[in-house]
Length: 84
Image (cartoon, rainbow, N blue to C red):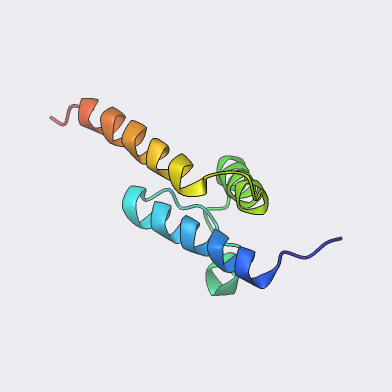
């Protein structure tokens, strides 16, 4: 099985950290203590982490553009929520 290159692994962790911090998504990291003790590791969060990894592996994907698009859409959805 091919291992994730260190620079790609760090990029994946940075993307996951950024999304978790901004949106509280609780996506498990690829490396470190958080990866080993991921208690909120559900099928959905694993799928998200897997797709982020796939995007980081592809050299022809504008990952920043994908994240910006997600954040724009998420902010729009979030602003539509009504808190009572």
